[in-house]
Image 1 (cartoon, rainbow, N blue to C red):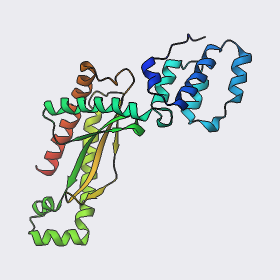
Image 2 (image 1 turned 180 degrees about the horizontal axis):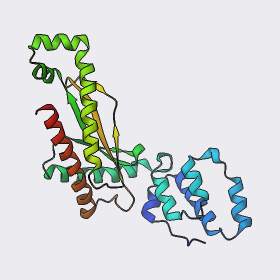
Image 3 (image 1 turned 30 degrees about the vertical axis):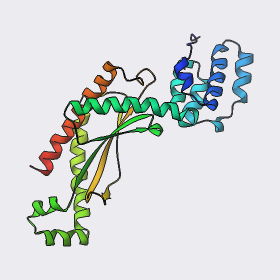
Length: 242
């Protein structure tokens, strides 16, 4: 039988009242694994429809400790105290952003995303009609006609997608951080800048142990993201300015 692992005071502060009740249920289940009368009775009263699949499975799991389960609950918005959690993530985001800027990175943005369980680093990959003018040696009037015809949008989508495939392949060759995942936005037009873009979104799932953003933790993520952003920049300039 697995040994019970205590939850943390900090972790409980990050849980909503609903999350705390589910956490209490997990603790009772886990501490009564050897008492089939209590464990089976409680387990039979729990409806699978009331929980997300991975929450339900780990709630009943005999190998998932209360401490591990607490981390799972914190990553699900309906069980978290979003105000406190967002404040802690914001501190992490601010430190990471400053560290990346000190490393010379400037063409990126960061944000807190509770739905994704942490912080996102966004890199926009885009082109505008000025790029098309240079690419095809067009006048401003000719480029405007192509924009109106929809050619720039179609060409931009093909060009950007091809370049992003190279970028993601290169990023994949960097030693992976397991807590960082990559997503791509849909192709879109930004009226405020006149660029057609696809965003590369680096999702950092911030664990409870990392959320305070100690210097070694921030350095680890900043070093990794610096390599990722630099590799993306290198391929961007080679593809669009080379």
